Every structure is written in structure tokens, then in C-alpha cells.
Image (cartoon, rainbow, N blue to C red; front, side):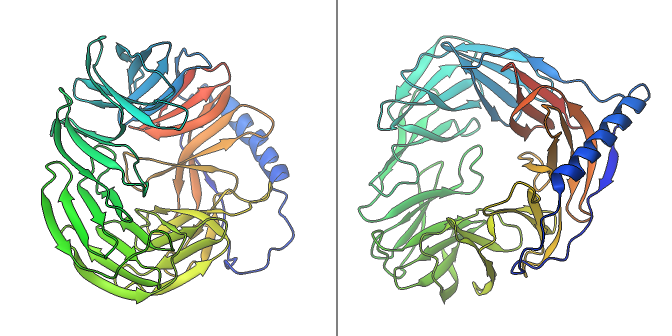
Amino acid sequence: MANTMIDLGEASVEPVAEAGPPVPWRTLLAALSVVLLALAGGSAAIVPFPAATVIPARLSDSMFIDGDRLFLVGRGAVATYSLPGGHLVSRTTVLVSGPVSNVVEAGDTLLVSYQVDEDGSQGTLAVTAGTDRVLWRRPVGLVGASATGGTALLSTGYGARNEAVWQAVDLHTGAVRWATTQPADGYTMVTGPIDEYPQWFVTVHADGRVETRDALTGRITATRDGPPIDPHADSIVWSAGDLVIVGGPAGEVTAYRLPGLTPIWNTHLDLGQTWMQTDCGPVLCAFRPQQGIIVLDPADGHLLWQSGRWAYAEPAGPYLVAAMLNRTADAPAYWVLEPRTGRVLGTFGNWNVVVSDTVPRTLYGIHLVPGQSTIFYGRLDPVRRTATILGRGEAVNGNCQTSADALVCRLVDASVGIWQLR
């Protein structure tokens, strides 16, 4: 049964078309599940599904994944496991005053971000992995860390407009290497490979001046004067790929290319109250909460299409995979779109998409058998709209993620199941 392919079919529904009679997906999927289970049982003796590696955990334990590491946090300790193998790497004593929000490993240092008080303020603790040796503690949240650069980037209000303080500190001592404060009525953000450590630090002042820094050294690399912004109106500052996109209250939008801040295009378009996907494949995708998607050409900024149908989209091969706004229970979970037109090419039925963070634009999917805690997992092909089944999981409760060639899910007894994807 391993590597069985299911053709999920195609659809020619346009994004603006009126919805027809609902397809009885639950009935069809229930029938499909029976067939799959029968096939799995009939062929298990020939090619059995791979068994899960199960790691015991308590309901109160928190789970975090960073690259090829799985972290389980609970009762004053962080247990670190390798992925995809699930082998215990270390157990680190971590004493913090509030719930843990993130765990990152940088070389032999374990960084833990946690809530300091009831207003949501964050703190960061650095400990030598596998010990109880505290290296430093600071009342600022963790943004990223670089083992090769020996630096951690912290912020009191990452993504906020309220004069956030940013600090780049020595990974082992906590000594400040460079620091800056977000300007009044301005914006600050990081961009580039953020999973490990951001590449660029961008500041936009209220008078329109844009400034980039090397996020590791703090050195200013470029400045550029642009149209003024008003953070109290519908101004925007977003990053997408190697572009920084700044929009003022009058609807004037300018795109600059990093790191030199070369102006690429200027247009008038209402992008107020939107957020922008950092990677939307060959296009730029902006989303307005509960109002849908706006898609732009990254070359010149002109509007390609917009729709109130989609809540979110991810690049998948040459296409986009989108989730619907206000999805009904029997509607497909994800749809395949042509990026430059928004034309619907097909769906993945009732498979939920899990995007791999270690293999860019590789899609894995999970199909939950109706009425059960059994899942099938597989690789999704957006070109043919097919699913290649890789295996089956039992007693799955949810919170499934992929990383380092592994599917990781919490099980019904709170333990963690790991299935290798290759």
C-alpha cells in the first residue's frame, strides 16, 4: 500500500463563480476511507506502512519544532529530540516565570522565549544545552539566533508600532552588540531568512525615509527618501522576497529592492489594513482580514486579480494552494490556483495541506478518516492534483507539523508521534 497514488480530479470553477449544490464530500470520503483501509489491510503483509516513533509526553507539555529538532517543554525542563529519528539529544533545566512561547537551538546554546507578565511581555533565557547552566536572561522576546554569527536578536515588541527596542546580543554572554529603538510613528521589521536569523533590519520613518541595516552587525547599508507615512492611518510596511513595500495614507505604494533600497516601482493602490505573505511564489499576495486576497505583479506592482474567496495562499510548485474564507463543512479544504489569473485548477479534496519548511514548496497532506483518530499522510502534487500515500497514523489528536523529513503530531494520550517522510 505504500506510495499509492490517488487522483483527486480537476475543477474548472472560477473564483467569482456562484457556488453550486454542495458535493457530498463526507459520504464520498467515508467510502474512500473504507477502500483505503481495506487496501491497507490487504497489502500490509507485502509493504507495511512505517511505524511511528512515539515519545511519551504529558498533556501540559508544549511542543516546538526548529529544523531537525523537536522540543518538549514541561516541569522545568526542555527535552530535545532529533528529527526524523526521534532520539533524545539532551535534557536542559529551564526555570521561567510564565508559559514558553518558543524554543531555538543555536550550537550548544538553548534559547527559550517566555511570557513575563499578564500584559504579554516576553523574556528570553539562554542556557547551555543539556545542563542547568544559565548563560543570560533578558526581559525581551526572541526573534532569531545565529550559531555561526554567535548572535541572538531580541525585541520588546516584534511587529509593533510602539517604539519597540531591538537588541542584538552575544549568544553566550548576552552582551549587547548593537541596539536601536523603533522611531516614533515609524515602523521596524526584519526580513530575509528569518527561520535561523534575519538578514536585513529595516526602519521606516514617518517622513518616508527608509533605512536598512545588516541584522548581524547593525551596520547601516542604505538609506532612501520616500513618501511620508502615517501609522495612525492606513499606511503599510511589508517585506516579500527581496522587496520592501511601503504604502502611505494616500494610497501611494513604493517597492524597494534590498539591500540597496533601489526603487523598483510606484503605484496607487489601496492596501490599507492588509498583511502580505513573505513568499507567494511568482506573485505578491496581500490579504485583508475577512475580505480576501489582492494579487500584484512583483515586477511593476500592477493589480493582477483580487477575490473575496480566499483567506490564505501558499506557493506550491508553479501554482498557489489556497484556503477558503468561510469554508463549509463539505467543501474541499485547499484549492490549486493559477497565480497570475486566480483561475481554479483543482482541489485536494478533504486533504489538509502541511507545508514543509525544510524542502521549499514541497507539500505534504493529511487525510483524517471521518469519525476516527486515524490519518493517512502523503505527498501532494499540485500539478496533477494527486496524493501519494506514504503511510497511516493511529490515535492522532492533531497539531501536526512537518520538518526535517518528518511528520510530527500529538496523539490522543498527549504523547508525540513521529513518522519519517522519506
